[in-house]
Image (cartoon, rainbow, N blue to C red):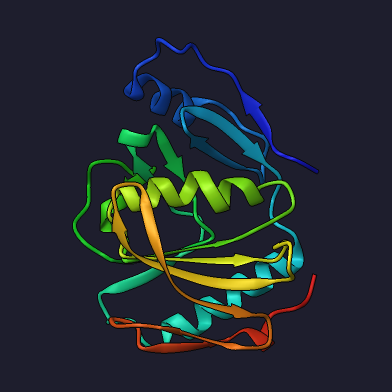
Length: 194
């Protein structure tokens, strides 16, 4: 099943777009994001997708500080890119953020993880990293199950403008090291093949 987009009035303000996103009744279990100003409704991720995210999450919990959390369904806002994005995982300190119950500013995230699905691979490879880099999120981990040369995990960092620098790539089966503040090796051989 592929993603569905919901057209909005191009004259609509960011606040109006977010209000529509927050107040609309969306299909239960779906993932609803604003990507480059377009509301995108995707089906719930597949089993293998969730297994990969869960295995990364388990490893991250072993190294994060006590005042951080790993979130699976937390929306992060990037208004400058007209984005309300829901990464597969977000590592962020828990702070007294009270601006909204529905999302946090993307700049609070220290790491975002996206696991591609067939229907969202382009967003995870192009649109979302541009937004995450623009927000200054230090690390972006893309687990690309549908990469043309076979499944890979690529760590991006050093955001400048809307571009990340690739720091490391591992084919499934190879280790991938996350730098400080994580200092963690992800064993991609634990990931189920697609």
